[in-house]
Amino acid sequence: MKKTFALFLCVGLFFSCGQKSPEMTLEEIAEYKKNSGSLLLEKTLYKPWKGGGFADGTEGGEWFSSISADPKTFNQYIAERDAESAGIINQTLDSLVDYDNAEKKWFPKAAFFEVETNKKKNTLTVHYTLRENLYWTWYGSDKKVPVTSDDVVFWYNEIAGDPAFQSSGYSGQFVSMPDGTSARIECVKINNRQFDFVFPRIIADPLLATNMSFCPSFIYKKAKEEKGAEGVKDLFKASCNVREIPSMGRWYIAEYIPGQRIVYKKNPYYWEKDSQGKTTTYIDTKTVQIVGNPRTEYLLFKQGKMESYSPVPEEVDAVINGQKDSYKVFRSEGSIGTAMWTFNQNPKNRGKNFYSWFTKKEFRQAMSCLLNRERIIAQTYRGLAEPKYNFFPSVNPYYNEEITLKYRFDKEMSLRLLSKIGINQDSNGTMRDAFGNEISFDLAIPSSSATSNDMAQIVADECSSVGITVNVRQVDFQKLIELLTSTYDWQSVFIGLGANIFPTQGSNVWPSSGNLHLWYPEQKTPATEWEARIDHLYNEGSFTNDFNQAKKIWDEYQSIILEQCPIIYLVSMKTFFALQGKWDISNFFYDNMNGAMTERIFLSQIQ
Image (tube, rainbow, N blue to C red):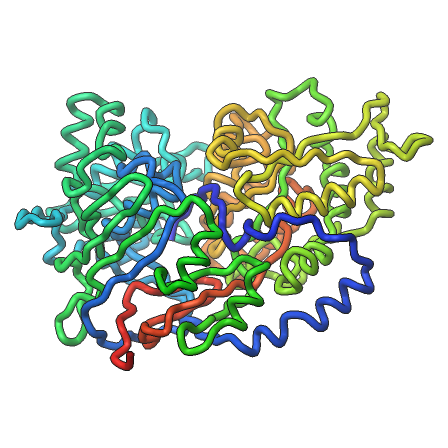
C-alpha cells in the first residue's frame, strides 16, 4: 500500500475495439443499459476477499502469463518510474506491512510494528521489528545474507531520502509543522532487526507513511559510495545476468530472454509458511511470455497456454459465453482506479490560447458538462460500468455519497458556463473566445489503448456539436509520461492514477508541490487560492486523528476538487477475470480492491 501514485495504463480501463460507435439518443442509451449486462453477470462467479485465512495447498505446477513489453530495468530505484518494470522486480521484494481492505486493519509482512504516541509532546514513533530468518538469496546458489535494518534505513535515508535521486518518495518524508515549517520523518536503526520511524508530530496514517519495499544495502551502498547516484543507476540493467539479482520475496528471476519470456522460480526461503511448514507459494515456476499484441493474449488463453485472462470490453460476451469446464469467469464490482481527463495549466505554456482557457474553472466545468458518461458506458463498455461522480471511492473511510460532481452531461449548462468567460458561438456555430480565437485543443491518449480512443472520439463528437474542436492525438505511453512529468508539452489528456483508498494517498499528486500534480506540478507556492486551500486541508487531515473532525476536513477537500474540476473522472467499469479450470480456487479471490489474488493458488487435485 503506497502513499504516492504512479501514472498507469490499465488494460481494463483502456482497451477496447477501437471502432467509433454511432451516436445514441439518451432513450436508446437507457434502454441499452437496462437490457444489457445482466444476463452476462448471471453466468459469472463472485468471490471477493472477505478476510480470514487460507487453505494449505499442494506444491507443484507452472503458471503461464504474459506482459506487453520487455522490462526496461531490474533496478528497483529506476523501476519506480516504470510500472511494468516495477511489477517484475517487486516479485523479488516484500513490503514491511500491508493493509487488509476487508478487515480494515494493517498486518505485518516483512516486519512487525508498534505505534507509540506521546500526546504531551505531540510526537509519534513507529517501532518496526524485522521477522526472524529473513534472507537475501540467489537462484541456483546456497548463499544467504540476512535482511537487516541496515537495508531499510539505507534505502529510506540514502536512496528515497537523497534529493539527488529525485525519488517519488522524497516529499513523503516530510511533514508540515504547526508553525508552517516542515520537518523530516527520521528513520533510525536500533539494532540489526529493529528500526524506528520518528515523526516530529502525530499524524493520522503513520503505517501508510512508512510502509516501503527496499533493496539490499550491501549492494546499493557500495555502488553509491563508489559512483554516487550514477553508480546506483548502473545496477541491474535490463542486460544484466538476472541470477545475480537477490530475492527476499516470493520469487527469483531465473531467466530473461528479451522479446520472449521471463521465468520466475519459487523462493523456498520466503517467510510465509502454511500449517504444514510449506512456503505458501505453491507453484514452482511462473513463465511470463512477452507478447507485444494484446490480441495474442486472448488467443493464448483460449489455447490453454495462459492461466488467466482479463477480457477487454468487446471480448466480455465471448469470454463469458465461451466458458465450459475449461475455465471459469469471475466478476468484480466497479473498478476503484478510474481514468480521468485533465488539462494543462502549467505557466510554461503561458501565452498559448489553451492556457488562458484551461486556467478558468468555468471552462473545465463546461468540459465536464460535455462529457457524456452514459454514452461512453453504453457504447464502449456495453453497459457494464457506472458514471464516476464522487472523488473518493466508496471504500475510503471519508467517502461521502452526498458530495458529488454537479457538472454532469448538460450541453445547455456548458454553453452558459463558457459564456461567463467570453466564449460563445459565432454565426457559423464555431465556438470562439473573446479575442476571436477558435476553441480547439488536443486530447492526448495512449496509442496502445483502443478504449481510450473510443472514449476520446465520443468526447470529440459531443464537443463538436457545440462548436468546439477536440483533436485526438495518440501518443506512445512512455512518451506520454515524459510529456506529463518532464517537458510539460501537452494540452489535455486521458490518464489513470491509483485510487484514494486512504485520503492521504496521492501525496505526490494532490498537494501543489507534488511531482505528479498533473495540471501544474512542483509548484513552489500554490498558484491559486483553491490549491492553497487544498494544501491546507490535505495537511490538516493528515494530522487529525479524530474521525468527526477529520470528516469535516475531507468533506471540504472533496467538495473543492469536484467544484474546481482540475481532473474529471470518467466511468467506473465492472471487470472480469477468466481462470483456467485446472486451478483450485480455495485460495483465489477476485474483487475491485485486491484484483486477482493468485499468490497462494495451487493446482486442483481433480484434473
